[in-house]
Image (cartoon, rainbow, N blue to C red; front, side):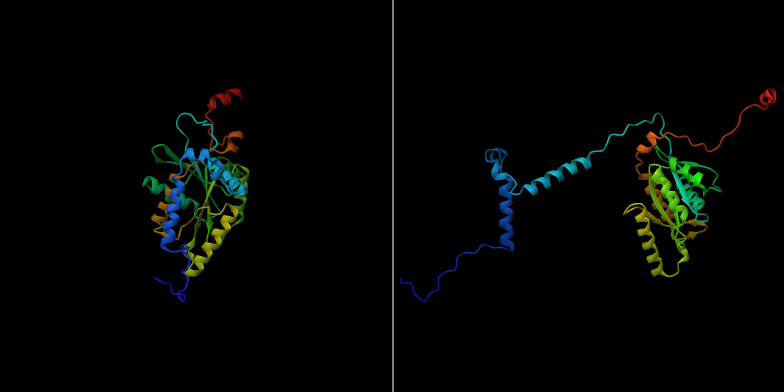
Length: 277
């Protein structure tokens, strides 16, 4: 059969660059590469080497970083017998709601109403876990003592006013004394009537808090009071975070031993005092 000279020459075959066919082809190529045995790699190592030395170094360093992140520095367990309770220091400026927060947390854990907060309060939060709530006094000596023993610091911030000088002072003291875990709690948010203003205030205080601690630090919001107590759901969320939190021993404390005396009692018989005098 004679070929008509007017017929156009056939176009050369074009390999698919996109679409279903191209995707199928790329998948089959990847599978072929994955099916290469270890013997074949050993026979021709140059064929399976990195094309770029920069990329090879980058991947190598990334693999080392991942391995180091997985490993933890071994910590010497110096505890013996029954483990001590974790000390949770509740700090804030006057009239911000420290005592009320401790009462609400005690009510959550023990189902008992606490009439008054006097000194440290220890409660059982799990089979092998006890928590001790301590209200931090508003003087510099009390802050230093509290910072030395705190495993967790709850910073109460008045949402209607903002950060006060006491909060920044306590944060600086915490940084000097090993910097334990810190969580923020915003109170007095029921004073806001405008929803937009409340949202902007929350955002502003959250970012200011992150600037002081680290990006992503936990900040809880206590929106208001119901029958003289904080809302059960909000206290439940806060208590859940406290219950599951892991407290790693601080290296600062292992190298700086200390004793904090909460109260002392003189048990010397009065007769002996009179006899000596």
